[in-house]
Each structure stands twice: as structure tokens, then as C-alpha cells.
Image (cartoon, rainbow, N blue to C red; front, side):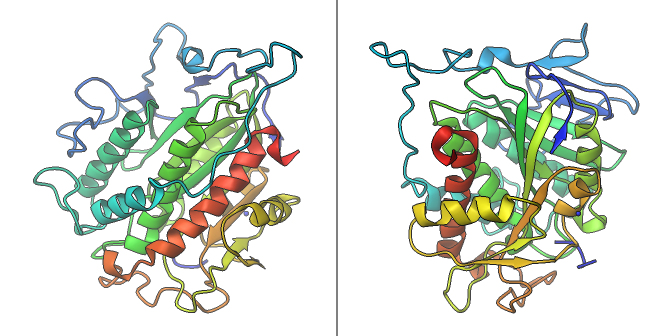
Length: 359
């Protein structure tokens, strides 16, 4: 989280992401896809002012081939012709805690990011490059194609597209910044948010019915003034899609009083209610606290007219990490149970949003 300092219709996408508005929006190329989770050994973006894509003749990345069967209507009951989508699965699957423990440990230097690579922070250019390669490898492991959104000479976001299982251009965006301040391992700020985005991608990918496209993004340079999210928000305005809402996550690993509460920052119309309606279906009790906090990535999207909300631990309520922006923001200070319970609520909320469950 940076030093604490805001539905837009864009037309038809067809799930070919136009690469206008960024210096390089590119799928990970063979040999540079982070398949081993290792650090990049070369320039990971094209020359400034150029774009790279899967189809150089059109300048757009075509991913329609990744859609599920029945793209015009999803699975159906052969006897009735009605949609046959099962209820949402449990939002707290058995794989959740081990996955998040591994992600937070690797990103914060408690475990090797890749063989021979251990991060002390995610502030320097080489360390952020290594983190990007790790994130690309995580998307690849899920069968998703990671993309690099290079918006400047120094900043590159990482994102993945999860298409709906019907034909739509309506899109929900979920993101968290992956950088840290210098000399801080950034376990809570914000390896926890990244772990939530990665977990959500795996959970959503297993749903047989999705009515919305999903963009999962890890922002660069949040700690330098929300630069990555601002660039990604600007890029979204060039895309022929309808952004339903944007959800950003920053610091979700501290819960000293054990109440499992989550603050929802500046929730635009209907978004607090979205989480409130999902909360009874998530395991346990998760109190939701509305706040007017800024200083993190949701601000970038609201300023351009996108409906947005930020998720965090109880920063305003006073139950927040004392290790904020310090070398002591380490893996062993993260409450992994709280992280998992918060993620379960995120799963349930976004799952209901992208399916008929929430209608």
C-alpha cells in the first residue's frame, strides 16, 4: 500500500484484447514465460511505442479458443433446454491455504522464488522482474495466458484474462499490487493481495458457468504513486468492453483481535451490498466495515469513471499491521488463516457476480 494519500461501457470486445494504449501488452513468449518461476534474463518488453501480440496482423490478442463449450449459452439440460449450471463450489477449497502460504513465502523471501533466487524486497527493477516471471508461471500453471502490460520504461503490470463461458463483453477486474517499498519483504503489503488474486483465478477457472469475462491483474509501482493501476485504468478506457466493476486488494494479513473483519474502501453504488449479500454464504462470520480510505489502487479506476471498491484489513479501525513499510513485514507476521477466510469471501462474492448465483 502506498503512503496513505477513486460502470463504464466501452463497447464490443469479442475477447480479443486490443493493445492500444500500452507500450507492450504481450503474452509470455516461449523462453520468457517464467515456466520455472526464474528471474528474467533479458528485456521483457518491446521497444517503447511498439506493441506485441499473438496476432501481429491485427494488433489484438485473440483468446476465443479458450472459451468453454456452449459459448452461446453455456451448458444446458437436454430434457428442458434450460441452463444446467451447478451451484457454486465451496469457497474455501482444500488447496487454498497451501497455495497462499507458498505464494506469500516465495514473494516475501521466506522461500526461494525459484532455484537460486530469493527476494529481499520487490522494489528494485531486477527483483520486480523476477516477481513478474513468477506470476507468469502461476498463470501458466492454471492454464491461463499471462500478459505483460508495459506502460513505461520502468513499469510493467502482469495480467491474465479468464473468458466467460457465454458470449459477452461484460468484464469484472480484480487486482493487487505486487511491488513493495525498498528494504521491506512486503509479506503483508502486498504479497497477501497477490495471493488472493491468484487464488481467485484458480477458483473461478474451475467454474463450468461464467457469465462475465474476468481480468486478473497484478499492478506494478503502486508504492511509487499508484503508477501501475493508473496506467491499467487508462488502458481499459481504450478497450471495447463494459467494465462492470473493479475490485482491488491491499494488505490482508493482519487480524490481531481475531474478528475476521474486512474494510471495504469507498465502495461505489451496489458494491458494498455485493459483499454483504455474499457474506452469509462464506464460511464463518466476516464483519464488513465501510470506510472512505484512499491511497491505494482502487482510486485509479474511480477517477476514470469505473465503479470500484478496495479490500483491506482493518486499517481505519486500528487492527492493522504494525510492520507497515518496514523490514519486519515478513512472512511470519502474516495471519494465514485470516488471509484464507478473506479469500473465501472474495471467492463467494465474485463467484456470485459472474454467475447466476447472485441474481
